[in-house]
Structures are given as structure tokens and as C-alpha cells.
Amino acid sequence: MAATEHFVREDVRGFLNMLEQLGRPGVEELPVEEGREGMRVMGQMAEADPRDLAVIKDVTCPGPAGDIPLRFYDKRETREPGPCVVFIHGGGFVIGDIGVYHSLCTEIAEQLDLPVVSVEYRLAPEHPFPAAPDDCEAAARWIASSPAALGREFTGLVITGDSAGGNLTIVTTNALANDPADVPVIVQAPIYPVADDITKHQSLRDFGEGFLLTSATMGWFTMQYAGDATDPRHTPMVGDCSNAPPTVVCTAGLDPLRDSGRNYAAHLIQQGTEVCYLEFPGIIHGFTTLRKAIPSGQKDLDAFLAAVKLMLERAR
Image 1: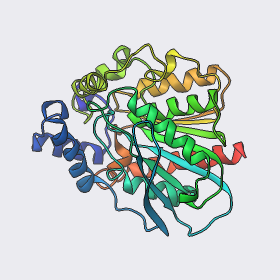
Image 2: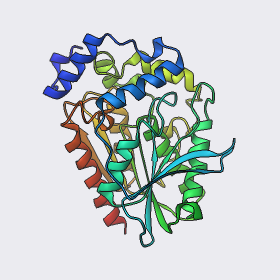
Image 3: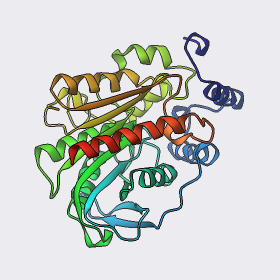
Image 4: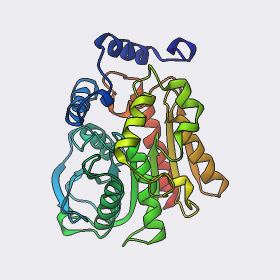
């Protein structure tokens, strides 16, 4: 379906037109390393500048296959005991890294006034499923232990991430709900997540071409990840989500993954979980890391983080 048949914001239309003129190949048409570098270049071109914070440092934690790189953010040099945000980046389980999401993590740390730890989990196809959820769970459990390397005492976790990271947010939250860590997950906040079988969704048919993330790219990501669709650590909604903590879910109106986020929010609501669901019209997948190219996305990110802050206040 053509972009003109849907409401598209002017800055989104301008960005999509620029991409069309560039004629950039899809990530599925490139060697994996070129696809990863392409996402880094896109971030340098299209993402907002990072916030200045008092603390930004790289650390590692033990993982199932060796040390897991992490990046720690805090707007304060020191702080009293409180929650910590665990951020899990997107990129289809194949591309993306903590560098691409650096500016977004500084924004989260600034607006929520909480420490943030960004997780550099192993990527497919070199490390297929379940390497990513294994690493994210290990990192979350380590952070929950208030390790000396971070110099903070944590009373709970807020787990968030976008796209593939939204999937891993749900999977990691479920793992810690079923087998508790040293402190609980008090809020989860998946951003345009993959939560169920997207091939059945109208949004994939409507927005699978011409809106940045394509159905061909999604199919390629799925193949590279090589997961088991019947495993709830791959497809969260095939499992038990009844122990979910208070949840904030946001989706983009022009996103092939839109209906997956809608379905997940509805699923939790039907189970009695407290949910805030935000759908932002006229904007595309990935807007949280395209805020220089799509300035209107900043207000959407602001609204999402305000909802997380509200849910945290209610959880406390």
C-alpha cells in the first residue's frame, strides 16, 4: 500500500523520500557486517546528539559464553538506592549495538533521572537463538545484584528496549518473574516489540514496503536468528505472560510490527496487568533513534518516557 494512502507526518515523508532517492539496498541484500555498519552510519546521520551526563562508562558482566559488554549511564555522580533501567537494543537480533543506541540511552537517563545499563548481547547469525535471551537474562540478574562495578544500590529494575530489544525486554522480564533475581522487575517498557507471529498481521501487509522496515528485512532477520517460534523465549505470547509487572508499550502507526505491540498490550490487559499503551500515528519503526531526521519523534519519545515515569510512581 502506498504511503499516500496513510497519514504520514511531513518530516517522516521527507525522510522516506530521502531514503528512496538514495536507493539504499535492504540489509538483507548485504553482507552482515555491511548491514551493521549501515545502521551505525544511519545513526550518525539521523539520530539526535547525546545528552551530557555525569557518568558514562563501559563495564562488563559475566555471561554464559564469556563477558558481556555493558555501558553504564547516570546523570548523577552519586545517588540514593533506587531503580535501574536495563536497556536492550534493537536491530533484528542481527545488527545494532550499544554505540547506535548511545544517544537514546543518554536521553532515557536524563528524562527518567535513573541509572541506565545498556546491554551488548551476542548477535545472530554468528550466535543464533537463544544466545541473545541468555545474555540479556544474565546481564539483568547481574545488574539486579547491585554489583560493585556500578557503585549503586538498586531496589528494582525497569527493563526496556526497542524492536528485537522489545522482544528481549518481554522475554527477560518473564524470566525474572518466573525465577526472581535479587530485586524485582517493577516496570517493563517494550518499544514496538515483536511479541507474536507477525506474518499474520495486517500491519505487515500495509507497511511492509516503503516505510523503512520491510517485510523482506523482517523475514531475513527471522532466518538469521534461527529461533523456535514455539518457544516463549522466542515468541513471548505462546507462553505464560500472566506474571508481567506494570507495563508501558508503545507502537508506531506506520510500522509493520504495530499489530504485534497492540496484541501484546491487549493480551496483558485481558490478564489483569496494569498497562499503558501508546500508539503514535504517522511515524515509522525506529523513530526513537531517528530524532534528528524525524524531529516530531522527540515528542513521542517524551510521551513514552513520561508514561514510564508515571508507571514507576504507581509501582512505588
